[in-house]
Length: 229
Image (cartoon, rainbow, N blue to C red):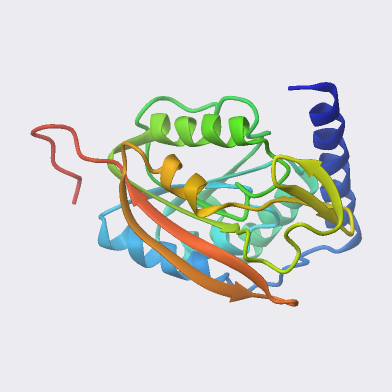
């Protein structure tokens, strides 16, 4: 990581931490539309345990728990995860949710082939370099069991904010303190090499509106293996 990348990463960690302090539960209690889709996809694949990357204050992690999954929720904001834990206790799902503070620029602190499914809503399009994104997807591949499902969403280069605001290079642009790595379609396709790319679904969310892709991809099963049912 270069000095400029380190500075940007540190600034984004501080910005998100301060944002969760100032706006507890900022995304509300209802799950995101991609989270609802992911739960259905995970259930159809026979998944039981889910790793969520960039869970924030936990609206989707809590939804997965209510749907019966065991959830490992990660974020680099300790404040967001504390809000998640309090909400899980309040609604009675704390027994199905664990939280870990982590920066996805580092290796995931999980064993190989240890989860059935991974979910990341707009985590991959944070202030991560293309190299860091590729390394992260490699880590997702490592921790997924054969046949496992990965659902992620990213803002793409068709978004109105692409190419505007403060440019940080590598298709990263900053607006209002939030830095976003906008994805070209070629990056989505390259991240799916060695996977089964099941779907790239275009959708809009929030104000502006933000334009995103919801990507669903699965690991091929090991020869002769069968998924748990």
